[in-house]
Length: 476
Ligand code: NAP
Image (cartoon, rainbow, N blue to C red):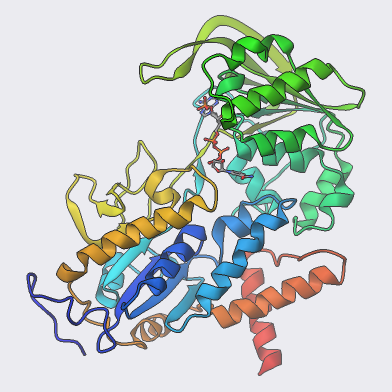
């Protein structure tokens, strides 16, 4: 075992060398976790062992459970993660939860450095009356539901209404609209959860109101995503010409995503109502003030009309005019952003919903430095950016870890490959290795292919564990 060193010793000569490889724990197996692992492996001259933990048996986080099922091409990034997983020195420990199966102190005893990559698991609240009525769903829950996420697969979702309001106009809202209105035949080829596909097939939804609190030039969706909604077969995207005119281009730089968004919305506004029965109606400068209900269920939405004012930071913010309007809807989906969840033993910034940090170095809730703890992805910077954004962001945190290496104290059990396994076994934790996951992966794709689908996800944590036990028994 590597002797324990005192702080201040020159350690870089040993840690990260063949004699004593650097041992890193990554908590969370989504894109940011995998990119961090890859950045470590790519580091020239660094001998490193990386163990990636996930509380779910299955890896890939948001790629598996967040990316919309009709965006299968986006899931191709998994190939890069598989390459990382095949590197010598990589291990996956699925079905192991930090704060339940392992503590932060135990991670410190077994790993020289820890990376938190837990993402942003829950939703931002609107804080308006009626938010908890039946039929008012967060996008976190709704997206998790159609993607078969173990936390949300048993969600009661009633799509038996004709009109729906989606609050927020970011790319998650675009995903939600597409999944609700895309032809079920197209969705049937994807890895969408069976029960969701059935509900969508039977759904009479004809109109979706898409509510943005600011104007056309401040929309959070990207041009490609709004155009995809505009191109949905059998659906008209209806834009009020008064909300997407020449004035909305003012102050925008030609060629920027914002400019392109307005140009596209102007073109749509010129097309008018269109001829299809199904409509997506964009309502801008509208902030929800109450979700209306009867007998505990959503019946409508009241919103306040806004005007734009200077936000004092060179941008524009919405300001209510006092004038309100109502929409009759049977379902409200709130797609106003995500936030992180507190994990026992890990500092958390309640207001921002992230792990407090300075350039990826974790700080305590009082601002004090935390030894050998780092953070990447949405847990670091909040829920923004595309999957690829995490590549550079994770590499930047790894850069800080390397900078800190000379003063990093080797973990007491960091030199032992078997120590983590021993700990989990002693505790009776049934962990899932990457090899195990590949068994599940094969099972899912085979089941899917048999039905003309890319994959049929095995549902539930227990469902996955049972399927794995069976597959292992058959292979034994
Ligand atoms: P987002 O891009 O931040 O959009 C959130 C939306 O909610 C904005 O329109 C925002 O308006 C609105 N909002 C926030 N608080 C509100 C409130 N209190 N009342 C009314 N509206 C409110 O977040 P997201 O859609 O959850 O997406 C998260 C990240 O994932 C983004 O970076 C996104 O691009 C990415 N993503 C990408 C894809 C893709 O590439 N296809 C798919 C899904 C997600 P304001 O702008 O006024 O704040």
